[in-house]
Amino acid sequence: MAAIGYIVTRGTLGPSAELQSRYAVKVFKKELQLPSRSEMLADIKKRRDGVMQEYNQDTPKIHPTKYNDELAQAIGALPSFWSLLLSDPKLAYHFYFGPAYPTWYMLMGSHSRPDARQRILQSGEDMVHEITLKTVRPRAQKELQRTRIIPMRLVALCFIGFFLAVLLWT
Image (cartoon, rainbow, N blue to C red; front, top):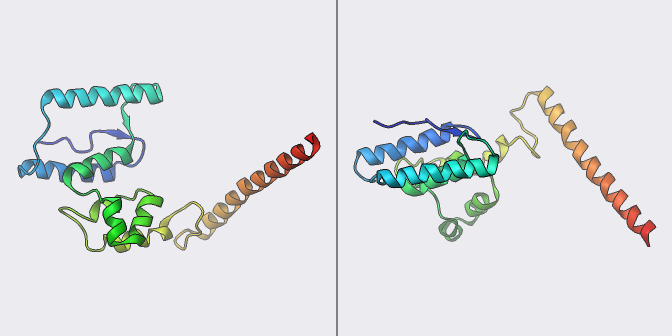
């Protein structure tokens, strides 16, 4: 028996639950061995103490990217930046500078998907911030464009203020 999805993350639970399922399948097939009970309890304590120190709350909210990377590494599904750099530089660029999409964990290892690379390279069309979307409803698209202009004006105003302060100071 496995407890899949029995965590609270700071983000979405779906990718973590999928990786937990893949991990559990490997354990059931005896391809992976679970850590000892004392190691698991020590890991739980370390994570709980880290949450208390970072967020000052007892609810164990796990950072999904770190946790997913740990699970993916354990099951052999975490791509290596250096191997990607040698084999596919464009994909390595997206791996290092792009968001941590769940599709990254489908590139290699068991249960890999042949279309994972294409999904990652086309994922920019699905991003909400700093990119105009084709799939967004027209009203939402106008709102995104309007909210993007306000911070740019604020930065420009701060830069002008800083420049004037330097000129007046000298």
